[in-house]
Image 1 (cartoon, each protein chain N blue to C red):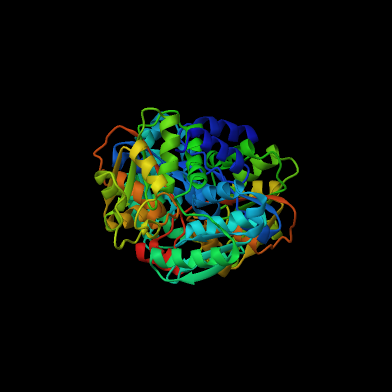
Image 2: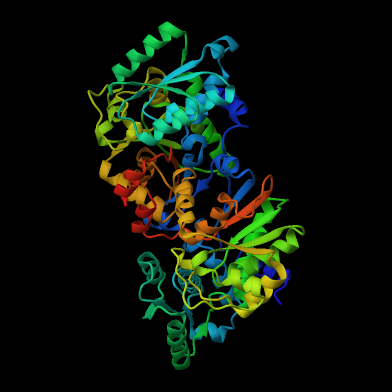
Length: 315
Length: 315
């Protein structure tokens, strides 16, 4: 299983290329919440989301031969951009398999980083089949969006940056899609803050990890219906599952409609743009699902890539 | 005339209450511009704009008797909020005279900080007349929005924070309304970066300082027509004029329509919300009005208070 030292090694590799994203706070939010809350703002990460960390670390760990053949990823958005930019920085080929209904700004950004985009159907199976065919015919290396140890190690590096600035934390709230982010963060957080509680947050329409955590086996949804597009993964991966069961203290859910006021608060009060998935962990604190008060809490804002039309809807 | 030591003293007073706002940068903006650019993000200042700095310093400098009587300000927006919050922190009464067509979010925020709002007509004369009447009948102390030495000293403190992080700068670009911000910034910048050039930026529809700088006398516009609501002041103040003529190297203008793409870039690429006036200095760099390349430039983002309807228009 992934160790803290893997995350330290990942940070040595990616340290010089990632943005050290800020830890933000808001007096108003603290008053509303009754807790002292910091937001780890990965919407300020390169490509606008934490995904760059894992993708860059994974590609760093490949052999020269693997890199020369190129990499492939299937993703509804931010992972695609993370792989595309990391590949560009290494000067290698990247092919991204995307569902045809992906958020337009994410498709454009992926192409903008020089990746080749191949469209497929909207189901996870569609994506995986298309990806496997391309791997068979071209020998690309798959950069899995969450079920990969090097990738998980990269995502966990953001907690090292939190620990550079905060010396005490009672809770870490993390949004859960496929489980890559929370598994990396949980390993790092439990090492750096021995008494911390790590809480995963999903939306009700994509609550596979919530069910998985309670049933202690990987539950796979038939479909995920949520505005949080980064959470539409149907189940967590095997590696993620093992880490989550060992290191995560609880998984909770919020409603889709709790996301809009949180995004609006971020935009109008804190002057930052946060994507729906990125607002989920913070919305759980605002709604006080865990009934906390007087605690020191850090919420991970996973990203800020939103189409203009969606921002208008929020407003 | 205002000295650098006045700005140092101001910073000692306000240091513990202001937000140390970040210096942001964007690889994409640097590539587009051909310069190395930092953005001093005062949209992250308390009340969402730099105005809190000057208001707090001015109220700090009043006598106990003056503070007990209360303060008054006339302002189309951010200065109102700055005075309202600073007064709240001192526990004193604040009356704000606002034109009846002020941006709704700014009116609400001002009331939210506990200030009493008195509406008046839209001209500068209207505001000044209403303010004077209230001063006569209640003995309030006027907190002028720009023509005041203590206020100017407070605004200049943001350059001390820039100098804590950057040791070399070729240019400082600052938006100009009544001249409070640029006069404080210019005094501090010329002291801390001896070879720096300080550039004021206005919109063409509110170009009084542009004309003033060229004619070497205070030019007063009949009316100012611009979407940059913080720039609708008809002329700079006498104190501002003297400092601008001594310390500012050039005043340039951009068109209103240059503001929208800059705001859009800030929102979609840099994930931050910037108000029209706040985007003016940066837009001048993006349009490369000064025809610079390879320079180290800092642009002041003066604030981030925008109504939801305006954000929709930008998108």
